[in-house]
Structure formats: C-alpha cells, structure tokens
Length: 298
Image (cartoon, rainbow, N blue to C red; front, side, top):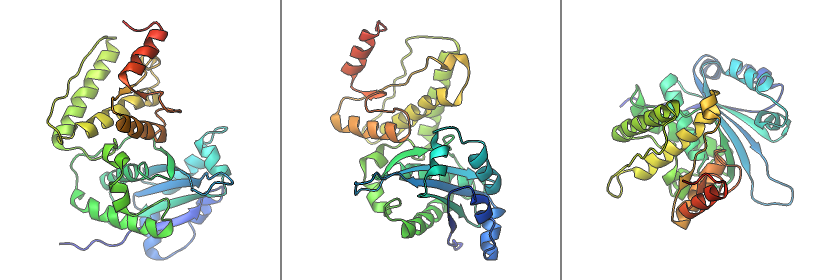
C-alpha cells in the first residue's frame, strides 16, 4: 500500500494582512502544496461572550484551486455590513487554517471539505457552520485514500485546538453526527436523492401542488441520512437560486420524537436553515397549527 504523507496545515490570524502572511516564505513543501495545489481551508472565529466558560465558534469551510484569489475575494468582495465575513474580519480571535496535501485534486478537496462540514457541524462548541454549497462526491480517484488523509488532517487540527477539533471518537458518537446531511451516500441513496431533488425542481417549475414522495426501507437502511441530506439540499434552493419561483419556497421537516426534534433543530440552526428553534423543524401538530393560523391549510 502506498504510504500517505502528513498534511500541511498553515494557520494564520484572519485579517487584512492575510494575503501577505499566506505568501510568507516557508519551506518548499509549504509553498508548493499551499500556493500551487488545490487546498481546503477553514475560517474560524471564537464568539465566546464575556463571563461564559464554554467556548463558542463560528466557522466557514471552503476549498479552492487558488488560495490567494479566494482569500482576496473573502476579504474584499464578500464583506457586507454585519455579515459573516464582516464579523470574521472584525473579530481579533479569527483564524485561517489552510490545508494542503500532495495527493489533493479537485475531487479529493471537495470530499475533505464535505467531511469537515460533517465533523464541525457535530462539534458541541460550534454554533454555526457556513459553506457556499454541498459537495457530495460519488466515485473518484483517489477516494480510497480519503478517509486516512482526512484522519491525519483532523488529528493535526486537534493538536492545535482540541475544543474546536475534538477527538474523532467524540464526534462520531454524537447524535448530530449520526443524523448529519453531510454523510457520504451509498450508490442507492445517491440515486434516490437525485430522483427526489429532480421531482422537487419539476414540481416547482410546473407549479404543481400536493406531491407525495414515499421512501420505504427497513430499519438501518439509511433513511435518516437520506432525509437529512434532502432536507438540507431543498433548504438551499432558495439560498442558491435567484429565480422568482423560489421566492415563496419554505422548507419544513416534521418529526414526532422529542430527541429527534432536538437533533434536527440543532442541525438546522448550525447550518443557518433556521434562525431560531422551531422555524423549520417541528412536530406535525405544530406545522398544521401554524398553517391554519396563516389560513394556508387545505
């Protein structure tokens, strides 16, 4: 088996002089794999309020073929008054982690980005995870190396900040991790997701109402992960689409069990699907009551 090298991780304070620090001369490997290869990056800010003991973080996860260009975009184009990038820039506790590896290609960096979303959204101390898109990858080369490379990346990040990057076993045991929309889907789940999303898009385009899609399967066949993935994907339609037909789109996830309700509400809040608990995730009775109040129940 081919040996897998350690990742290269460059951590710098996130601020106006980021670009200068990114290009500071280091060893040859850092310059090569950070500046000339595809990279994955994390921007984090510690938002812990004075007088509280538990650290709280907001993070952005991305991947790019040109870290200089992407950082310049975040610093000078993406900043709007009081948006996330403005807050990152103004927070003196913000950091930029740039991750490089000699085996990185576009597919692998997108896979690592997705896994970072999966892990970071499951960290108790992370209250918000942001990203431009979902990057679910099907098959690619060298996908067989992805898990080992990711574990090496996470272990190295954990050495730097064990609160933001706790040990993998803690994350994998969490309820949020098990229900996360960022798990890699099986071929069957991937195909089902594509069919369902296509049906939703067609219904929106044709303004078709009262559509029912039924997913059947025995316990343990992956329905929870598929549901979570579809919920996240549908919630992003309006965010990522400026067409008029998306203006009235709202997404709700209905669950009966209190434990599931809490887990999905936590996920929805961390991923920006809802600003406050219960906006998008609720029990069926609450959903019916809300729409009856609006006069929209049929």
